[in-house]
Image (cartoon, rainbow, N blue to C red; front, side):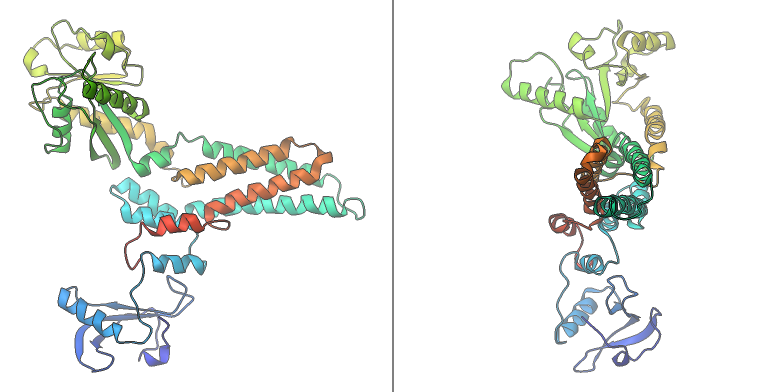
Length: 427
């Protein structure tokens, strides 16, 4: 709606006024609350806006909404409409809107920090700066094409363009070489628990989740499908997957569960192999194949073998398997779980902390796709001979457009439809 300041009975914008909220027709008092007037363009949407802060009881909210419906032209906002108007009025760019959506969906402190940084323009400033450099290079290149033979174009001007684009290409390449940390933290770090049947994988999952998320049974092969729980470990969102026990099987359903388990193990960010502790610490060859230098190994059922777990045994198993780290544990009693969780937080921080502190972090797969397109066009431009300068100028245009698609300068309608579907009503 559009409001006129003179009809609001207040003169100071962006200042809270304590008022009786009255029905616009009957004049009946509906509530007492705060009224704030935000004249455009200095508002969230860039348009004239009024904010009513009223009591949250259902009857109060309903009476105020019913009264507003009696005003000509009033309607409820569609999902994400205020943010869409802010985008249309150039108050926010696409990366800031995505950051806002991530902020609304953040489940951990780290996700909140990254989303807020993006919502405040952390990506926009860098990408707009890169795009401006490309546009400047494109203008210079086109000037050489149009006027190089007729006007006094300064010698060496294209050498300067090439040098700047090489520097930019190097910066974007370095930006892309981030091990996908931003996307991983935004979507959750996937941790898969693998191991033989009846090793205690589901018991560990339930203990970590502090609830019965997975069925625990003495019958081997109980877990067929993947069971997931989300944990907050040191502010990192971790999606823990309990997988089917790995063994030779002729059961069609169990074989499918094992296939899914192997796929999840391959695609997980962190792999844990959990095996039962035995007096000889022998490991089945099928399980041994899943262990490499990045695998974390848990020796379960320590409570059943009291006294045999020594530092020498742990070191021998680690050396034989090649596992990154080994923990003795009893998933049933909880013995050793706290130490494991403490070490896991340290592992997460050592693996991701330096990367997530980067103020310009790629958090969306579409950002990466457009950055790769931009880099490809820049490299084609740099590899194109000077006699084909007309073709190289078009590559600069493609590079600029690729960056423009990230911030919403170019071709964004499909992205907007999906994005605003993540917003709550009224945002």
